[in-house]
Amino acid sequence: MHFDRRHELKYRVDSRSIPQILAHFGGLGFAEIHRARQVSSVYLDTRDFRCFWETANGLLPRKKFRFRVYDFAASDFQIDFVASFETKVSMPDYRLKKVEQNRIVNGLTIREFDQGYGILRPSCLVSYRRRYFSNGEVRMTIDSDLTYSLFSKAGVVAAKRDQGWLQIVEFKFSSDLVKNEILENFPLVPSQFSKYERAIDSLYRKSNSIN
Image (cartoon, rainbow, N blue to C red; front, side):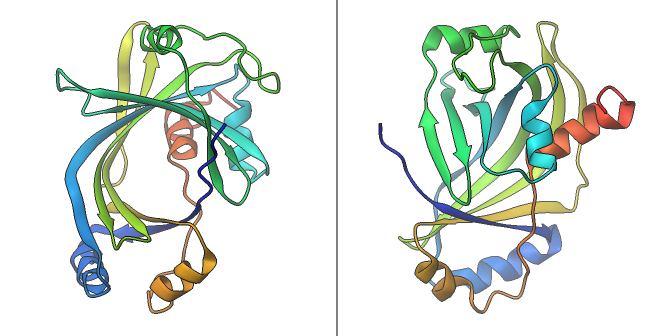
């Protein structure tokens, strides 16, 4: 099994800072590598929200399960399911079979394919617009228009949009040396930000559906 080991840094930024950020990294050789896409991720969790609580409490190692769809509204949308094992790096773990993807699309639980977590079920849908940049060694993405929704057999409901000013700038790289060279003059401080944690907080915890 192939593991793509990578390091990640995330920054929460105000949308008004994006032009300055793009100018800064444009001067370091970053260029947009393809068109922006609408990304929709169906997150899976146990009935007691084990994945959420592990993320919220900062436990390591932990796993994250999501079913990702690109440009869902298009007739030729792409599907990519990856379960990630998180320590201090992110490593794609394995992909689901088509039949299991279809069960998730229909709001059903899937089989116990991870002995440590057991049966999983769709817990929420996270959607956002993503732009992609690279200098050949480091990939930078910018996510905006974050929206969180419940996901079930009844369809997508209770959509809640995050704060309009919020954008997430993320860097993915393979070595700390590359990170230091690229980010040493970047004026912002990395922050802990989980779209999944944010979604569950918004959809469940604020309505006291999870505690």
